[in-house]
Image 1 (tube, helix red, strand yellow):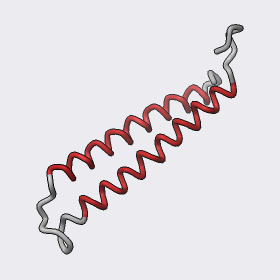
Image 2: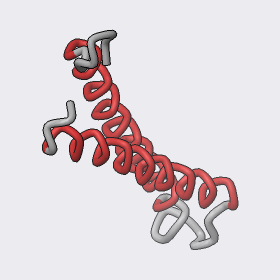
Image 3: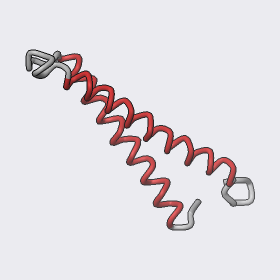
Image 4: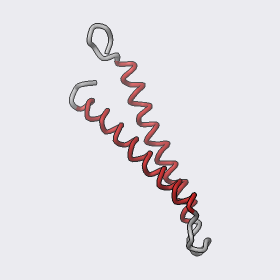
Length: 83
């Protein structure tokens, strides 16, 4: 909000764009981590995924969940007329 209590619309749009970009980036990381994990299963792999691949996939999923929650909060504010 600015000093008159109004939302700075340019700042709000920038925050919304950044939140959407975070979701898109997190989605790409999940896709990449999934492909890496999948390659460790037959026919390409042994079926014994590395701890690193599992942790990377888990972290990517967590970031996507966090990014979606943050975006949902912004969207809720937007729909409620608070942005």
